[in-house]
Image 1 (spheres, rainbow, N blue to C red):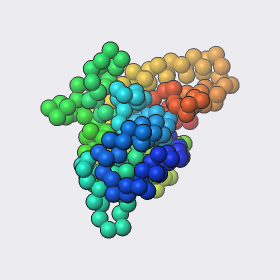
Image 2 (cartoon, rainbow, N blue to C red; image 1 turned 30 degrees about the vertical axis):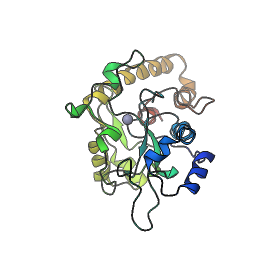
Image 3 (cartoon, rainbow, N blue to C red; image 1 turned 180 degrees about the horizontal axis):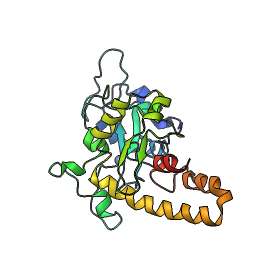
Image 4 (cartoon, rainbow, N blue to C red; image 1 turned 30 degrees about the horizontal axis):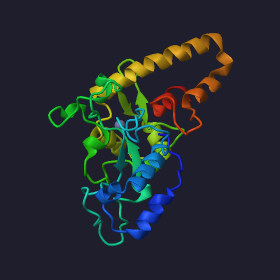
Length: 246
Ligand SMILES: [Zn+2]
């Protein structure tokens, strides 16, 4: 999972110092703060969903994800000694809409829409996670590595499984990794389909390179994993690329 250090936006620092007990709704009602938080959080992962790593589309398939649940939009009571997680910069990540994006011409309908409460098997990521406590259920993004994937990817059907060795190297409990994947529905049919399509493009690019430019595979990997000048990844599924080629 790619995760980069991004400075807390000045607007949020000022807002938090003036309104330490603000709720998420109160933050969102301030458009300057809301916009700067959305812009800055987006580059924490180079524009990929913090959970499924699909490429986010601003305004269409993007929301702020609270890793520690924000306990509703109007709550900022997290108990004694616990920071106000509704507006805490370290708790805010970029996430997709978990399959519930609106149908518009710009979005791929099979990839990003159609999931809802009645079609729960397609719901993923934050939409699936809801307010479930993170302890013993989800891996904190900070524990994951940019250079090692805790999942293995099967390119023939896009499915994922836990990479026990990688978990061991990162000190992550294998059972927690399975729970994480299960509770975020990362192995759902919808995500499998998207990864399978991506894998076949990736594979054909790499096969060409193995044949015609075998000395520059490293360069090709770096190209697929690169950030552009705005700090955005041009390709989704960073961990899939890492797991397969790095
Ligand atoms: Zn996602």
